[in-house]
Image (cartoon, rainbow, N blue to C red):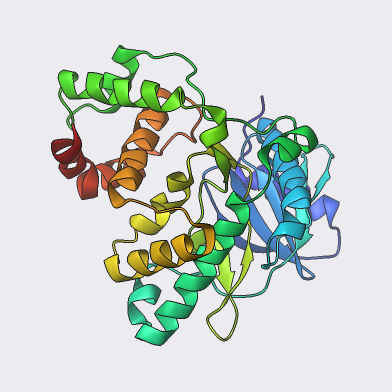
Length: 291
């Protein structure tokens, strides 16, 4: 395992792309991203994360024919510092403020695009996909540790409520696999882009994708806290897929996601400031309502 500092990466880029000047774009929990000649170069904070890039590349290859939006064609390059590269999907990312700024008509259009993308993902045959991408995971319980969870939720939940959350997580993990669909598991405006007309034109960051209940893919959209937009997406999704998305079930998935993150189970571990922000915004209210 090798943790990388930004200086190490800059030095590597200067050698790997001698004579060029990659432009720093962004950094996430696991990666630094650079732009060079129309290509996005992602370099992992930890060289072990290259496995996630390889999974991302395999998922994208499989998903691309089934959806109408652009999906990156990712190449993983193994050098002294491994990295992933793909052509930039041009467009703008979006967030809560953008959704709120839209007219009713524009909001309807974007909601329909989001619903269509999720419905297309959820219609993919899971068995065929798992044969092609064997490392793609089902939601599963990797073992429960009450003390570890209690520590992660300190100051937010009582021990009895933590135990109830554990019970909910365990029950959800035992769902029959045939109830699951292929989920992006992190779909939001931060990993999708809109074209000049405000239409959803590209989606990326499939490294955390897997098989889960359909409601899981609505967590980030729910957390935008724009009820009219969320309702439009779920109604359009139901019209396309025939599946009804119940808000309470989405909220439960939010809770389960936080429990999983606290356990370091099959979720990306929340960074402390982000975790505390999310807790303050909705977890306490949700726990009181649903436990």
